[in-house]
Length: 503
Ligand SMILES: [Ca+2]
Image (cartoon, rainbow, N blue to C red; front, top):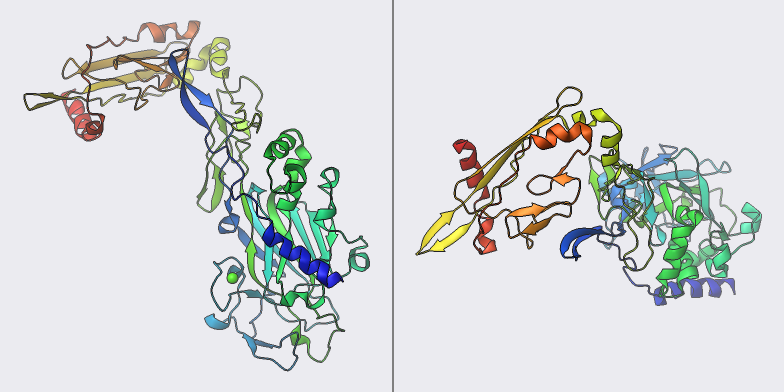
């Protein structure tokens, strides 16, 4: 009867299909019109879920546990006389290195990692396989291990939240939970919303010869999600609400490392055959880990650069997980974004502090004090007039001198080759930091921002008065012509060069 239940449970996975992408939150900010002006609207955002095995490093303990050094012959578990499986680390076709657990499957025959056999029986044959991301990630789908050999009789899946310093069990797997781990066997579908974070021991993936029909061992993430969001994850609001408010729940699905502790290989539900120990070994053909970088809802992309994952932080946050406010943006305490209200969430951006700093610390302007040379515009116009093509260009140089102590000076040089130039455009959204374009001639900046395109944060307060007074404001230029915008992109580099030479 155990058999039947187990097979039934496993097939159930095939029938329950969840929406492939159950998260929105793919945009961190957008520009909107509010009270007749353009402004940034910020939203909670997170990277898309993806195959995380592309970004991990794998290590084995003991390190020399992979088969093939020296070469070895293996026999089939179900038939001790069928011994045609050879492992030789020096021959590519016969080697089974750990990378073969993460290559793309679907090929025949499968590629797999394989351990040495249980030659030292009765000493246990144990292997730790550690997968490290060197970055906190969040699981979004089941972890699936596919075995090429029989599934192990004893296995523990563990995780670390601190880069491998401490470990906690995720799930225990045994053919006899009570005997091996002194735990009552349990299945995920027996859990309830209030016990959904319970660490269980399951017998569903270890029993005897069942491996012939299913070679996988799962850690059921989506079944746990379903405890809060309903069987087809139709009520994500409920899950998101819980994730927002319950740190334990968030942490449960978060990790930096995974460890698969193989404790006892499949023996085929018989006594161990001491005369033919080459029947007993571990072999894994595939490991699936779906997830996303944890960016605390402050980034919608995560990049893999120089072997390391890092969030591309928005909302004035910084750090690998966007877990702190950027310098000058520490006006209020950092806080993670919120999934609620659905569907856009709340960004909880870091803001404000920069200007307060300037008020409070007189020497803060010197922080701006490196020389900024801003070619703020290579703005052009194409003007059709009796088949003439007239190209205009406006060009600015902004110098900012640190000014020892308190004085800062800023010189704004600007000129245009022809009196009509188009500075900004609401279609191309050239005004930055919430600035609004007026008649294509100037950006009206939000308080605290300056520059032609509102691209620079400005000092305010006593210490900065010099800076502001010495700044020559740009004279509004005559009304520009309406242009075919598509042509705009053709010439900027050319004109930028011209502008420089003219100066
Ligand atoms: Ca493989």
